[in-house]
Length: 345
Image (tube, rainbow, N blue to C red; front, side, top):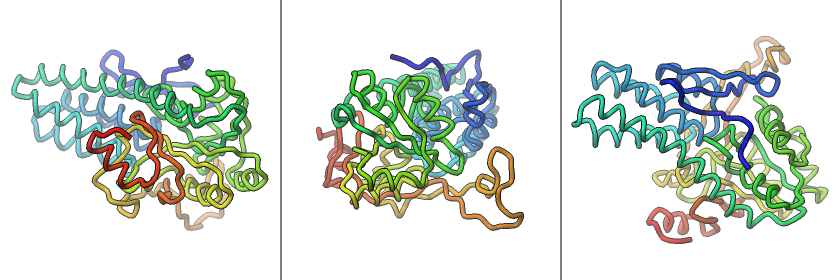
């Protein structure tokens, strides 16, 4: 069963994005005709979620070549795109994949290169949707019937090219007639859980409740949560996971109370070159995300703010990492290396 909305598509030489800054009260689309507009859409979180950022960046590379009169301009545009958001590995993964295609085909001339890049961008988008559905079928195995699930941030069709990762697993369980119930964290400060995940859960008619972030520990302590399923923006080679701020705290509570804790990501989100989470650059965002809510000031003028967008959960706190190649269990370093070598899990 597919969604009633499309968050990311390419039509008439424009990247068309569902504006996630204003959901759920307004459903509007933003059109990006230039790579600069794509970069802004990623940086300002019109489009967000690691897989969706990767797909958007792929189309941004195509538009960059279309706009660039010289090859040096094209490479500079790709560098500019790659700086939009530093934590999600899918951004540079997609750009590097597009550049690899360009290097292979540029000898055939500019029109040929443009055609190949557009085809590759379409391929990245379609591949992500297929990957997410495979992940969901694999992840569904760990969801027991009548499970109560806690999730954090947004990992559904809005965060990907379609269907979703962690929320895709939840949807698959529901569509397979498992009697599940979902608690969604609001996810401060941008409220991705309240604005986006709650909206997707209601669109799918999945029984659910929205909670403030600080209520999660009480639910876990009181035995009301069977498992936590959430996403990931970058996974290190040892299994450390960078994800939306608050993920680490959830993992600590889950470990203390013996609650299974799963990260759900495509293999493209694993950064095999980074040995552990300490090497992951954590994006810090503007203070107004914390001092203002929906444009209303809630903190004193001049108050200093620390606003990291992500935190890193150590692999010791993670039960498993669900991918399209299977579920990675401890020992994570050894099993991720097996995955890198193309071996079965």
